[in-house]
Length: 248
Ligand SMILES: [Zn+2]
Image 1 (tube, rainbow, N blue to C red):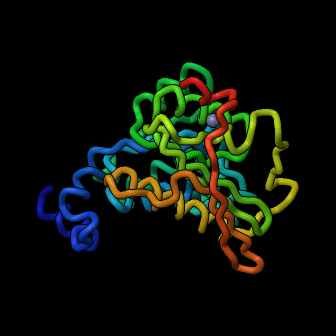
Image 2: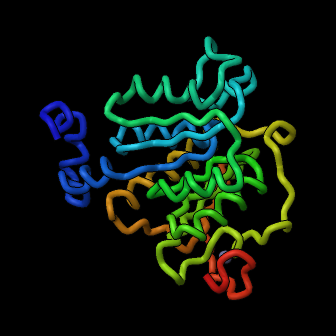
């Protein structure tokens, strides 16, 4: 690290759990973030400001006026532009050290598989079950740690699946494919800071994983009721019959 980087990351370097070594690990990490919306905005802002080395940001949508209430990567002037490019612009201005790759497409199949394989950590900041399950399948196949978040109304949830370990549960152990229906915030509404809180927890988890610090959340689902402002958590056991990870 040069003098400027030592200053930029000085408040991290002061932490015993991180230090220069941990900060260097962040610099060599590659985070794949699926979705540049309400969750992806705070998640990528913290990943970039904290000095993650490489960040791939995937989103096939364009910035819409209805996004701006919570999707803090984007600005009024960028309405109509691709979200991935808008996010890249914001994040590069925040920290030019970070290599940012913007993918303006909804990736699936082999394309998604290749992206997951290239990454060291995956953050699922998407808003639908089909994408969540596709991302999970790729993370199980390539044994990449997955930090999954969701927010709707005043409710949020976040879970870490450290799929590097053979005994880890996966997203499908918790939510079997075909079990749930999408609850879209376009219909149900979402309280803006809930996406901020959950996306920020996802960034904290991803940064700890990247720095080699125990995540603490692996194997648990953390649930936020932002009306009562209460958290609770449930253990996520591995499902031996899981259609995705059983036998992997
Ligand atoms: Zn599973």
